[in-house]
Image (cartoon, rainbow, N blue to C red; front, side, top):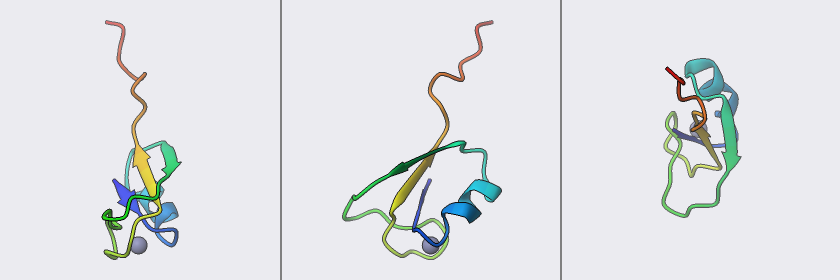
Length: 51
Ligand SMILES: [Zn+2]
């Protein structure tokens, strides 16, 4: 999920994405307002269960 700087907190409340990375992709847009995205919210790739 991508968000702009105004919606990064909303993204955290809204979702289960515990990690944030700042991005500068030119053609990526906020999930909430369709403004240009500044952040990427994602799940950890290390959350894999051992069993
Ligand atoms: Zn936004």
